[in-house]
Image 1 (cartoon, rainbow, N blue to C red):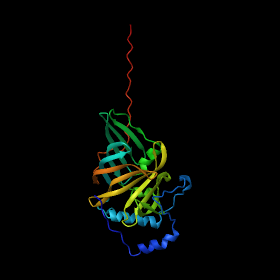
Image 2 (spheres, rainbow, N blue to C red):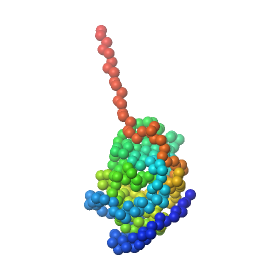
Image 3 (spheres, rainbow, N blue to C red):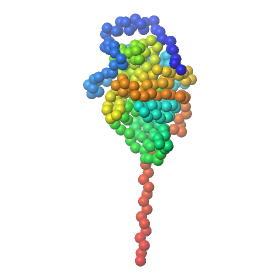
Length: 284
């Protein structure tokens, strides 16, 4: 279901952008990404006022700003297609940055199931089917992308927001619509970018560095459909992009929020090696 949301109006907001436009870095292009190397892009000491206002507008139109109780987690199920591979997924994302994603699919009559988890500090992976394997650390660019780029619950609220500083970048086009762009600097100065629709204030595109076909490039998520879940608007259809080229989609079929996760573990299972018993010596 496509949602048409009202514009967040403030008496001085339009005048603010008209006054600021000549002073801000302007980039009118189709979803432009910052190109500076990570080491050369200094993390700002504070989030600037333009970025803070865009985030506040987004939280307002989605209903998350004044949600009671506050949005703590999202649990979702659906389908993901990447190139020719289509899988089912079960996803948990939390407001403190944890992620738990299970992929399930069938190939040549055999069921496959793989679990990816970020516990807030460590990222790990475990093959569950067709034969369960030992969980192990997940590292590299893929793991960094998984830990920092979320599908449904962005780092715009506490406690995860405390890890970020945001800087306004300019303007761009997302699917032909004008958008404002900000850049996020997370833990270890990991960069993400976010695009907010100028008219509706919705977050319509976001992403960060990832890897596809062995090549590190900009990987984005572009939302075109949203669904209200207990009064909070959440993306339900997301296109997958690599260097602006579409290569798949995420279709969310079921969503719930603020679930009891006490029985859900995000920590990597300990691997217990079997104790080898020494065979008794037989005396002649």
